[in-house]
Length: 191
Figure (cartoon, rainbow, N blue to C red):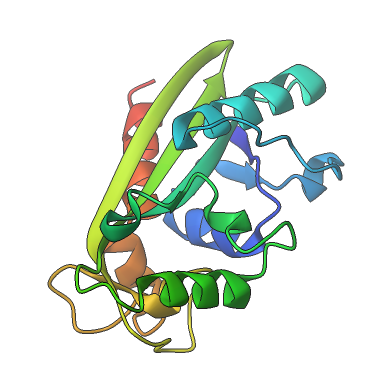
């Protein structure tokens, strides 16, 4: 089976590719000649994932899946949420986003948060969605060199390390994206 993963984020692509069984060949947007930014104009994480999958299917014709992920912080009423990648502006800079988040949380004692990933699959003209959630909290400073995005400030529940300090395989086994991808793989294995 061949599927396109509709993302320009190669860190995400590598995370997901590491989880895929050998019989599923994952193609990137570059592999299919898609160079434009796929629209993400919806106001929920799920709707953005669906919009991206539908866009790729209608414009390129490939069976595909897309994801959208957001960091939802309790003390900020779920922000940055759907705007996680652009939290500090359209430049989508992870350090700027983290700095803005830490500034907004400076006076808060409640640092509980969750990462949420929704995957939308467009396969043979049918849409399916899969959701993964990882609960944790936001640290007061950046810790660790690995991962990407908010990983240096997100510590999953029952762990002492941030996502930036743990291995990719561990992150995939406990994290939001790994949970959603495993649901996707289970669904595909039943076909």
